[in-house]
Length: 160
View 1 (spheres, one colour):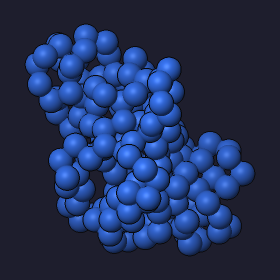
View 2: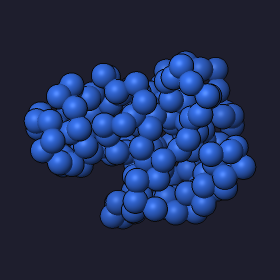
View 3: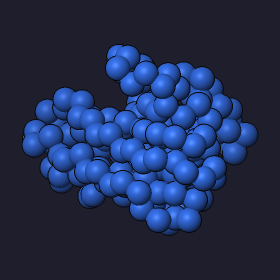
């Protein structure tokens, strides 16, 4: 996948996953990502929150713990949460959706970020994940582990 389609996908997702400042509304993400990556955000001063959800696909017998790190413009960690493995066995199908919420108070405008990694799943092939945030300006980013092959790091829409 070339860089242009990835950018277009990220911009399309921008409109699909934004949530209002009222975080009591129902979960609005209707897509899931395959692969590992993150989100870059450009929030205004005030509260910033981002919720991440994960479903184990259980294609492997290795446990998949998802680590979610929210960082600020100075790259200091502002919040960190872990979504545990669902405990189901290999080939048992997609597991239940689990969620965490990361938040901070934005004092200075700048680029904030969310980094998502998964234990025992370098390429993000054994999990599906999604997110929502109160930040209306963001872009989804991919940072899959490098393979000894042509350098490809696509964002994978699991249910476009």
